[in-house]
Image (cartoon, rainbow, N blue to C red; front, side):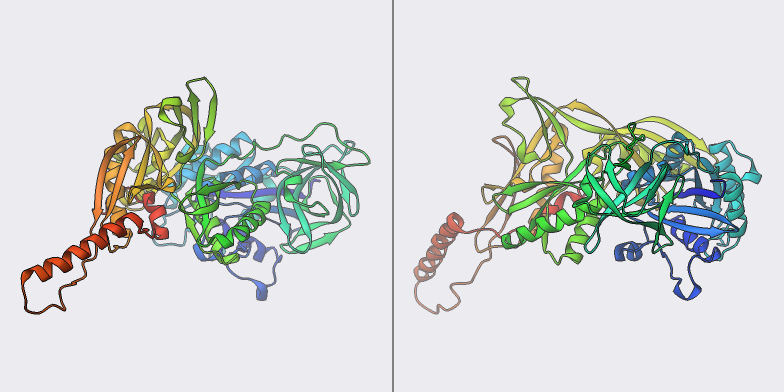
Amino acid sequence: MEKIRNFCIIAHIDHGKSTLADRLLELTGTIEPREMKAQLLDKMDLERERGITIKLAPVRMYYKGFELNLIDTPGHVDFSYEVSRSLAACEGALLVVDATQGIQAQTLSNVYLALASDLKIIPVINKIDLPAAEPEKTAAEIMNLLGCRRQDILSISAKTGTGIDSLLESIIQNVPPPKVDLQAETRALIFDSYFDDYRGVILYLRMVDGSLRRNDPIKMLASGADGVALEVGALTPDMTPKENLDSGEIGYVVTNLKTAREAHVGDTLTLVSNPALVPLPGYKEVLPFVYAGFFPESNEDYAALKNAVERLSLNDSALQYLPENSTVLGFGLRIGFLGLLHLDIVRERLEREYSLDLVVTNPSTDYHIKLTNNDELDIKSAADLPDATEVKTISEPWIKGEIILPKEYVGSVLQLIASKRGYQTNLSYVENQALISFEAPLANLLTDFYDQLKSITRGYGTFNYELSEYREGDLVRLDFLIANERVDALSVIVHRNEVGSLAKQTLIKLKDIIPRQNFKVALQAAVGSKIVAREDISAYRKDVTAGLYGGDVTRKRKVLEKQKRGKRRLKRFGKVDLPPEAFFVMMKRSSDT
């Protein structure tokens, strides 16, 4: 046990976690130089293209006789649950901070998670080779945050390899070895699971007590599922089979389970022959709070969409979905996500990996409804809201957020928060940086809040949040009618004070997106039976009098009257073809000006 070190890398997005993992793999000789490539642990094409880590990745390395188990974690706020999994399987964490940017919002969030898990934190300043690097200023911020000494902070360049030797020595010296009870029954913590098309369900786990051998019958304490450990081994970073996994080690198990849902992330794996009775402290169940409707462009592809989402959900425990039916879009699924980036990643994976053409509706959150008969409902779409006469109260989720930004932008950001119905709870300064703590309704931050924040702060502002509570509000359902026909997929729940401005902005954008017809199309916004805004798409005007020559003016009038009758008939029977962009129009609520 004294020779094992389990640690993870935590940082804000784009601070160099994956590059540091590459250098560690290279320096420990885990990967041959000819096989080395950038972002080696980021195996998905999307991760490489966007330069972000989406899925955590464990890997085992050997250095000077020590076994080093590393878990590379995502940095974006949407994937905080991935970070919490990694922390529960480790004894130490490398806190990586970019020397050019300093401490950011997600850095703070991850530090709090690591401290709550009682991990040994090794602070690391990365990118010291860049001309804009300010290592001493960044070190002062870290010392203020952690209360550590300057000599405890390591300075490295993950890109060039500077300081990586010292970092490995620090891991060996400072990260404690795992504590295990050799006499206890076998218990292992499952920190990730996924479904392989050829091998079935594969579990990533941390052995806490006991030992697990190949072909051992296994049992999940939470789900009660039984199976067999067909293969056990370590990731180096490819799967390397072993005869057994012992206490303190991190590795994988290939099972004969049918679905990954039988082995929940955070569940405890034990042996059927000598089962443990007390499960390990697991993770909180991940609950999505952003929902969007996914519809195939052709109803014939509904079965393919459902099958694709089922397969994705095997590898993503946070993905939840329910069937949905729309009068305009037909059959589809309402899918729950952890945030807008998570939504965007899933949409792109469905389109790329499963060749689906999708229509995605505007994202929304869930609402708690109390009816006049005191029954309670939880709805995830405005279309599910009962009639206003039956609704007593509507409660919406609020978040607690933190924004770190240069102090000269504080005034503009406070105005932005106020425009989203939020309010500041605390404001503090560290050096030239400011930390704004605030509370705001989640629904108002789902659209373009992050983009506006980046624009106002010229890219320097960073944002982190967590769900706080549900609060009652004066909320109403805003419907949109196109050619006098209500489109449920466009309906939203908004605060009464925002109805007028949101209705007008949305109709103007719909007017630009929806193509003109041979008849005039009315675009209307309504709250209940009251129309609150209207825009008209003018009709194409075909010059039916072009072929006339000479004669009385009544000839022209006769032809124009005939055209008018035809347009009136078209207005009664004509259908407006809505392009897919119309259903995502509220992603950018603010006007282009």
